[in-house]
Image 1 (cartoon, rainbow, N blue to C red):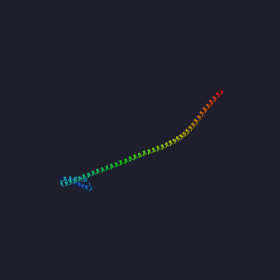
Image 2 (cartoon, rainbow, N blue to C red; image 1 turned 180 degrees about the vertical axis):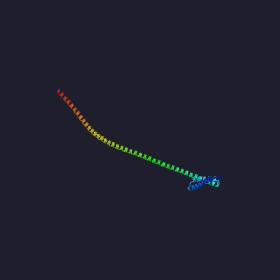
Image 3 (cartoon, one colour; image 1 turned 60 degrees about the vertical axis):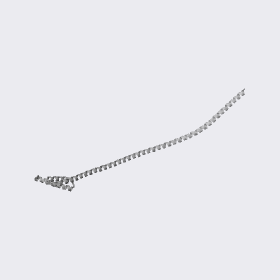
Image 4 (cartoon, rainbow, N blue to C red; image 1 turned 45 degrees about the vertical axis):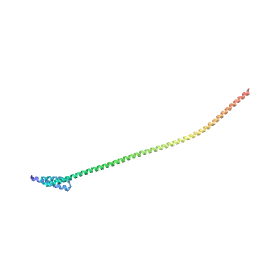
Length: 196
């Protein structure tokens, strides 16, 4: 197979382009660029019937494919690790947020308990104060009752004394009445006896 001048020139330009791309890829560290360049150069070598060069470029391409696959695998692994670390950090952050929420809830519960306790203490204090006031009023009333009882006892003693005096006076009156009746009877009897 012969190439025309036009085809030969394009063929040589393609080879030069492939070699330049391979060198640029090596200099720049681009495995992707080197892979493409070795594939192009292997095909050009096959087209040129240079089996040894074609094999060299295919072997180089296979090595680059393995390196590329390894790099992609490393990238995928790194991405998975990054995602794992991100998820782990997110879980840790969520755990911290949950702990903070629990702490806030516990603080609210404690504050509520303290408020209820304070209200109960205030109510208990008021109740104690009211009970003390009621006890003071009851003491005053008991003292008044005791004073009235003493007055009543004094009055009862006075009444009993008066009753005793009245009973004695009444008995004296009965005795005096009986004596008067007896004296009147005797006087009537004496008059009757004197009139006979």
